[in-house]
Amino acid sequence: MSSPERVKIVVIGAGQAGLSVAYYLRRFELVAGEDFVMLDRAPGPGGAWQHRWSSLRLGSAHRVNDLPGMADLGLSFDTADRSLPAREVVADYYGRFEQHFGLDVRRPMDVRSVTNEGADLLVRYDDLSPQPIEEQQARGFFGRRRKSFQEPEPTAPRHELAAQFLVNATGTWGSPFVPYYPGMADFQGRHVHTSDFADAEDFRDKHVVVVGGGTSAIGFMLELEGVAAGLTWVSRRPIDWLDRQELDLEGASAAVAIQDEAARSGRALPSIVSGTGVPKSRRIAAGIERGLLVARPMFDRIAADRVIWDGDGDAPAGEVRADAIIWATGFRPELRHLSPLRLREKAGGVTVGQGASWNDPRIFLAGYGPQASTIGASRAGRMIARQIMAMI
Picture 1 (cartoon, rainbow, N blue to C red):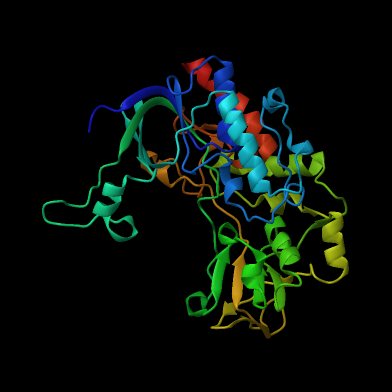
Picture 2 (cartoon, rainbow, N blue to C red):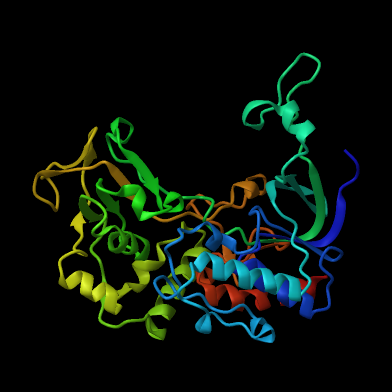
């Protein structure tokens, strides 16, 4: 392979956090494609929002805060069309933002690894763009290249970038979390994670168990009401309902403080909802009142066509039929490509303060820990850009 392309900064991920960092790098008069390069695995703009289910609307989920500089385009999520799928609105706004500020995002690019190479960080990534027909034919069924003694399976990455600094803004969507329960492998129905949910109609006349205590689980319950033949909600912890329609500043600040303390300690990050509670919107309050949004304690095990409570914990013995189990159990930070850098601590997390890795000052994690909210990610963009510029 030829010598890697050299830039000052590589930003991995073009969601809220990555775009915020890039905006402030442009404010410091750095040029996208020359001084810094943005790599994004998705086929188009929109971050993780482009992968969400079509019925999700702005206002029915966590609030999406505006990107810094979005007002220059005359755009705001506060005034966006709420009749359209949220994924379409976010993709449209993010795409226009990228174009307006000349961010030159390279996609779809899948970062495989980041390694230390002396003073540089070497980013290896694959181009996921559709290949020419000749290449597709050479690869054979499902895109796998036919093996032969003359043509071994290629192992080298397609592209390399050498950089002084790295901003990791990959978020969590690519790393779904599903806890283990006995009997999972014996289940003959469908296991569906939040990241796989497409349409409530996929569960028409099915008996569905929804697992989780956050807004995604609640949204699934509301969407599946009247569609599923049977609907059961279970949660690993009691639901902390808040008697207000939106999360207030005090509750948000407390959640950020909890996330920040965990990040600075190198511990695995706790659930955001566990630190904030769930505000009762009018729709949610109505669901509680009619008995839909009442969570049962977590089941103990899974059988071929049902979930079972053994009766030796918080819930009496019993069972519920299940044709599908929807695991709205969250995500973990997507950091696999950073594993060669050995940033992960024994406590399970990465030690991060003010967006910077404490183990390697060349590496920044945007949208990690206290920056995970959309407003936190935007503020972190300026903070991270300033730190980088002070070291260039």
